[in-house]
Image (cartoon, rainbow, N blue to C red; front, side, top):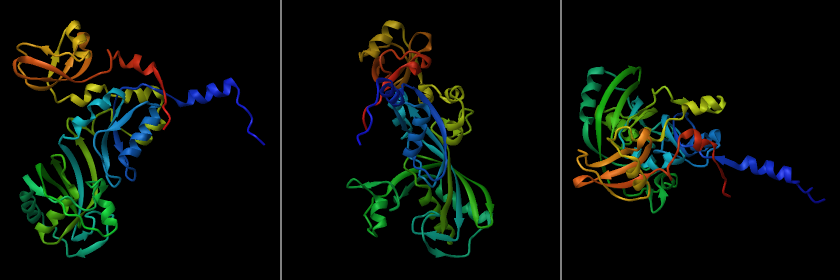
Length: 332
């Protein structure tokens, strides 16, 4: 028996369910353990019924904490946080070495843990400043388009090149039996599991990463009042959800500010360069038009030559207006 034909009302209802809203802003998500960054993005996008979403840098399923999610026009600036410094709270298990460097791997060596506070503080001194790290095989770093962890699962070792990283600050928070908690403020590309293993080697007992929470990415912090869990975001009212949505320029908070008049704003939005005299800065800056309307990101060169780098689509009216606009979902 053939399926009954759907009437116009049923077809309109089906189309309405697929309609996605234009939502522009940033959600400071406290990602839970056990899901990937991309899964987190999908769930936030679904909660807002948003047309476009992305994250600002992968946070492993075995780690929790701050994962800024960009919606709509904010995705244009998500790359800025890829290069930003990060801060983590890491729990390190002393005396145990695993083949992955963390608690998910198999134990390949164990020794009595060194738990003397003075000894540990002395060892941590070696890991501040500029260091070199060997990317682990159990990582998402790719070789010929394939993540290293895929090779590792097959027992294949790929030659890697050490990379230079910087540990801006490394503090011992507490020691609890064979576990120590440290706070790490580091540059991009730092593998905390490698740092844990290296600290264990310096102590002579070995170590592995037991838990990891990201607390800061660039100028964004997990302690921000707008930060929320995925569970809370999915169950709160629409009004409360919108209240958690931070403006697009939140991602550029660390950059200097330029302001232009209406005519200059229009030229920038059309992709035209400006000569802004006596701006007093060079490099990237966030730029605003009349009424402090955020326009986007520009690059300022010598003599105030200002070039649009990433500008908001069209005139980008207020978030309230943009949220009312809907876009038809394209087939996946």
